[in-house]
Image 1 (cartoon, helix red, strand yellow):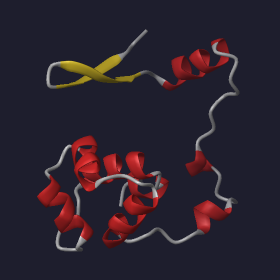
Image 2 (cartoon, rainbow, N blue to C red):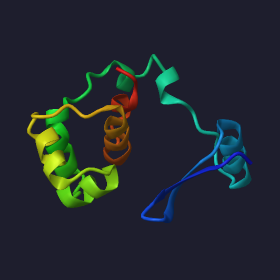
Image 3 (cartoon, rainbow, N blue to C red):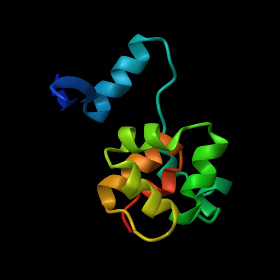
Image 4 (cartoon, helix red, strand yellow):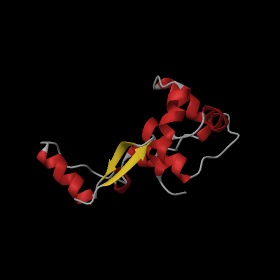
Amino acid sequence: MGIQVISRDGQPEYAVVPWEQYQALLKAAGQAPAEVAANDVGSAAANAPLPAFSEVAQIRQAKGIAPEQLARNVGVSPAYLAMIEAGERQPDAAIRRALAWHLGVAGWSEPS
């Protein structure tokens, strides 16, 4: 298996596997195969406008996530997260992907 392990502070945090192997793992676990939402151009979610990054605070609060926890999960300082939430900074692609993952905003992880 071609697994990439991503560590933080010397401890494994994520494992990245090729798509086919991920599908095989889902099948072995008795789960339905995963679908790529980006390919579903007919869905309402695909046509809905994306929230602005200045809405991060509202989304975070609605999900009950503390700012310090989100900042740690995303890999930025709480001060930098506050600047993103205030609209003072535009996050780069890596931070957009992390915010998308932790807040569940799929469109933010797409290339701009």
